[in-house]
Image (cartoon, rainbow, N blue to C red):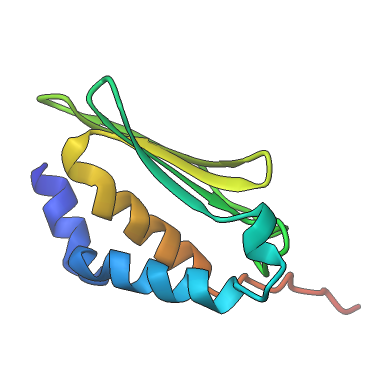
Length: 119
């Protein structure tokens, strides 16, 4: 947990994750996308949370994502990946805003352009 707190010093405030996600969702509602896609947040019986954010029809649909998985002592954990056209995160009860912040950071980071070598 100590390492996670140190990492979070340079991250956006996790308490803002919900507000940011609301804005991201609204920005993609175009009278079409929201009828087939959206955001789902549910509890799981581990206990914990699962988040599914549909990416099809968004600028993130083809963006690469490096899966993340952590097991901290005391039952603190998360697992994040992009699969089947969605950002999917499962986590322990106190990591919901952490996982939402991971989505925010990924969504706001511009993908790196490949470098072209010239001869």
